[in-house]
Length: 199
Length: 199
View 1 (tube, rainbow over the protein chains, first blue to last red):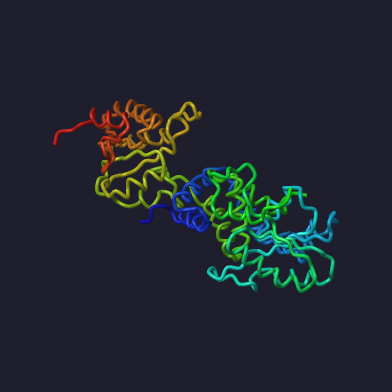
View 2: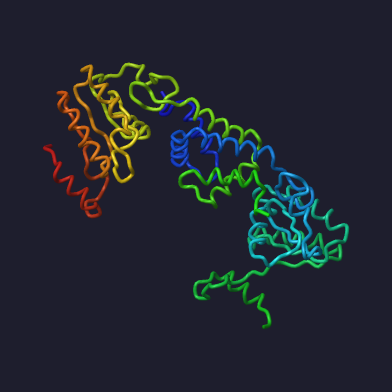
């Protein structure tokens, strides 16, 4: 006899598949859910199904959207000649929240990582190069993460984009605002010295 | 324009309702799910719906089950005259896993907690007393948590059950196996002294 009844065990198993959710958390979630009104459970189930069915890639920026081209691509922006390349939709949202960028976006959906088996062809790079073909953009800002994979992806993209005669820039790395030099890690402090600028 | 597309936002909102899942975790789960094959998402959605639809209380032990009486109640046990009262189905599973108990179970689905608005009538206490009426049980083991609520519930149940002429016992409290006296909290160490036994 298994510890839990079958459909409860199935639910625990299904929750356990999610990232960051272990068996204990999954059990807690499952018990919580079956004690809620039926609408709560059906709301979650419907949200899962409909999100999975409706969401697709925008044909222009490759961000996730429900209609293609997405709302962002369908509206005019201030800096039509600026393109910001990010790894993920979450990164796009983070950059938008700064209110410092008013150009177009392109989402790669990952970064080159041979160890994880992610090669350039797994990313939306072909779509990026195609997009740069019509000479709309004068500058491409590579806003991939300042990680090994993000830096590698940025270096790879720079080699591809420069021959097109488009200016390629990289977001700045250095000490976070409000940080203290004393506690900064060596790599970040070193980078902030290398990338020092005149004031 | 909202940060995420509508059905993605709905999914994030639905995940956020779950206990212990904040906005950041909910976003991570949502993005994970829409990148998985469609079967993964539909498997989770189906598990949620079917668990919520199928699971009910066993008419005998009040544990969660799909058919009533549940599998446990339908099978004979070694100690038919022993009844162990627990707060939750998880507690039942924990006790069963010790292989030290071979009697029947009764699940209260909570503990008395006036601060949380949980009174005896919110628990499966009426069902417990009804079950004790047919003189099957000679001993009731109160295995509620050694917390304020669990102790209060045990005291309340003791007052109800003793007049029925049934022996009422409480699981032992004391130092956990492998613990060190030096680091034990005062309440636990004090209890282990009060509840000392001859060896």
